[in-house]
Image 1 (tube, rainbow, N blue to C red):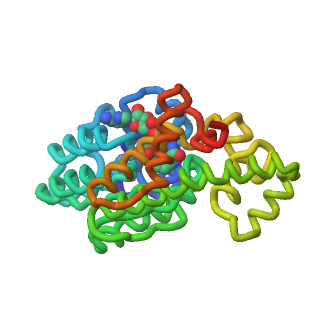
Image 2: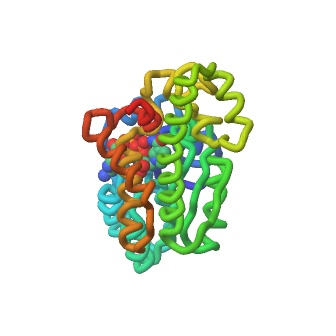
Length: 288
Ligand code: NAD
C-alpha cells in the first residue's frame, strides 16, 4: 500500500486528503493548526506527530499550503529530512519563482517534484472534480497521475517546473475579471427591468456564457447554488484571489506583459481585502 503524506488540511486539503483516504492508500496528515484535524475524524487518515514524522513515513508528499512563504518553509524541511527517491507534489497556488526554486533544491537532493495547482474550489476538492495544472517532467507526471485521477477529473501537463503555476495565475486573472463583468451585466439587466432568471437562461446558453455565470452565478437565487446563496460565506476567499492577482501582477512586471484589465481587477480585490471583506467569497466583488 502506497504511503502518502498530506500537509495543509485546510479548506482544500481536507476534501483532497479525504478522497485519497477512500482508496487503497495509507494517508498521513499534518497541519500546524490542530483545528484542521476535527474535519478528518471518521476518515482513514493517520495524523502525524510532527512534520519529520510525516516525512519519514511517506513515499509521496503532497503540500496544500496558503502561499509561497509557507511552501518555502515546509519544502525546506522536507528536503532536509528526505532520502533520495521521494516524490513531492505542491498543489498550493504560489509564485512561479519560488516554485521553480524549491523544486530545483529538491532535485539536487535526488527528489522527484511537480507543481500542480488546482482549479475547482472547495466543491471540486470535496467532490474530487478538480483540474490540476501541472509543471515538471513528463515521467514524474505519469507516475503521479493516479493521484490527480483520484482528487480530480482533469490534469494537464503544462510544461517544465513552474508551468503549472504560470497556467494557474493566467486562469485566475481571467476568472477574477470575468466575475466583475458578470456583476455589471446582471446589474444592468436589473436596472433595465429584466427578470434575472430569464437573463440567466439567456446568458448561460448564449455567447456570454462562462463558468462565472453557468456554474457560480454570483447573484442570490439565480442559477446553480453558489456562495451568493449563503451571503458569500465559504467558497474561494477574496483575500486568496487578491493573492493570486498579486502573483499575476508581479509575473506581468517581470515579463513586461500588458495586463491593463488585470491591474484594474487587482486594485478592486485589494480594496475589498483591505476593507475587511477578504474572508468573503470572491464573487462578492459584484457588490462593490
Ligand atoms: P486554507 O488556509 O484553508 O488551508 C491552508 C492550511 O495550511 C491551513 O489549515 C493551515 O493551518 C496550513 N498551514 C499553513 N502553514 C503551514 C505549515 N507551515 N505547516 C503545515 N500546515 C500549514 O487554504 P485553502 O483554501 O485550503 O487553500 C490552499 C491553497 O490552495 C492556497 O494556495 C490557495 O490559493 C489554493 N486554492 C484555494 C482554492 C479555494 O477555493 N479555497 C481554490 C484553488 C486553489
